Image 1 (spheres, rainbow, N blue to C red):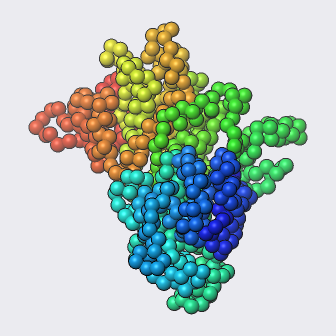
Image 2 (image 1 turned 180 degrees about the vertical axis):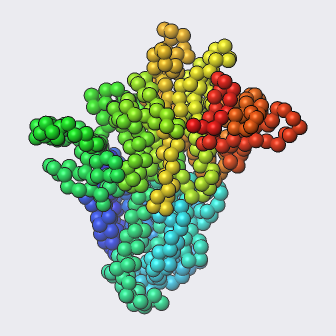
Image 3 (image 1 turned 60 degrees about the vertical axis):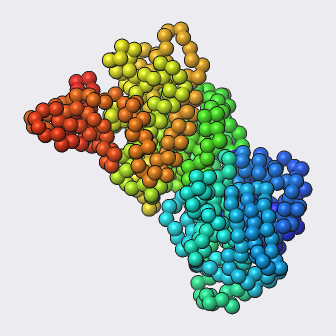
Amino acid sequence: MPLDVLVYQGPGVSELSLYHTLATLNTLLKPNYTVRAVGAKLLETEPWGPSCALLVIPGGRDLPYVQHLAKATPKIKDFVERGGAYLGICAGAYFGSARVEWEVGTPLQVVGDRALKFFPGTSRGCAYPGFEYESEAGAQLLDITATIHGEDSEQTFEGIYYNGGGVFEGADTPQMRALGVLVTARYPNGKPAAVTCAVGRGTAALWGLHPEYAIPKEPYRSVLEHSSQKDSSNIAGRESRRLELMSGILAGVVGPIVSAFNPYFKPGSDGVKEFEDSQDKFRFFTGQSDRIAAARKEAESKTEEETTKNTPVRDIVVYEDTIPTTTDAPLFDISLYFKALQDARRDSPFIKQTNWGVGEVLLYGEVVTSTQTLFDKNINLLTTMPYPVLSLATVQTAGRGRGSNMWLSPLGCLQFSLLIRPSREIPYNRTVFIQYLFGLAVTEACRKVMPGPEGERVRLKWPNDIYILEADGKTKKKIGGILITTNFMDNALHAIIGCGVNVLNPPPIMSLKQLYPEGTLNPALTMENVAANIMATFEEMWRTFTEAKGSFQPFVDLYLERWLHSDEQVTLMTTNPPTKVRICGINPDTGFLRTIPEQGGDTKPIDLQPDGNSFDMMAGLIKTKS
């Protein structure tokens, strides 16, 4: 993982903005990142991109940036498009926009196009009048609204420093949202004061304000003395809120993972970071060799009585700048998985308010009890882990199915759990559609990996199973299932999507591999490629689902085309006497299975909820789930 945070220091940069930017970044990012100031020459000539997590262009003057960073601009743009992050503050935000129109019609006028074009529109300033160079005469302390990364609702932040920044024109239009622009802060008049922009595989955050300015220090203190907000009794409280705002800005572009657990860490032996959760104890190692050394030392020092105790300890080896080799993980080629994921995702933008694509953060275990339990039984892990996060295992010893069912997970079965946090714009009653959406993503991913008649035989069984339709067109065999668990904690909904798919299992277990005649191989049918395509396909569907605020309407036709039940006649055992009905679809509002009675004159639909009923497809019965 890149660990450098580079802050531009050169012609045009305000010394005050540079000082406060460096101080704030060091306060919030050390020791997990190295923060350092760099000049235009380094950005132009040195290979800084691979080790850089974030490039910051602070406040100052935009025109000198255009002149002195001209040769570095293509490298900056390429860095972000390849997955890097950019933070532009005031002049740095103007510099990151497609066009600048500043103080038009005055002696200070600056008008022109800019090369970075992270914000694909015009940044127009000043948002508030009175600006003077090398002066705080036009400075103001503004009460703004902003959306912290990972949250959906706006919060108010009082007295954020402003001096000369612009408005991101049209940033909240549907056209801009379609281009990956998200308004993250607004001035008191409601106009966009900050935006986060999806740029290729990277992210650019542009701010017209100065959230980097520390409240207890100059020039903030002087402006406070002359403002209508002269009350200085709560300086500490305001500074705490400012740091909270800056933390949210940084999380939106950098998003450190391990550092998110800092409040829970306790010093372990030999400097190992560890914390105890509600079910398991976690230990974080910086390399496989450290973990092996700790395990050996632990084994040598344990007594026989301690060895017999079954203490649930989970060791997590963090690979920050490398990928585990096939020696580290011989049963799942992680390098091959990430290459397949990159090919499947191509240049798709990330889901709103996330730092990476679905499946790009991987928690892999060769043998685990249950990937699902790992998340939903460990509250701190569930609520603290940045999302989306994929937990994947080669073998599960206690996999979970629907209700009290167990899911057997031998070699050849792909099993994983995906942690996501649905937007608050999605009503809670619409979360029932997540299982349908993910099931559809699995079928479509299988068809991508297995083009032709083999892939077309992968179908859906309501509400959450993956089936194979045999070549005779009648025989149906289960090869997978989906389990959704949701938890509402810390004012956020956490959804864990558990899934198991038989990919390479030999007979008698039915799997995707057995769709091909014996001796016929599909080189694309690997555990790694199937997992990668499921992640990429779901991400695309989830983006559409989120933008539609939880409506399943964009997927209904495809879902009904892929499922096994259209016009199927079944018997409802939930009525007395049992009722023969015909399946006609899904209620688009509730996700319930919609049926029409076959007998009598009553044609009023009967809707059946997925969590209360079990579908015995072989017997043609729908009965209360036991």
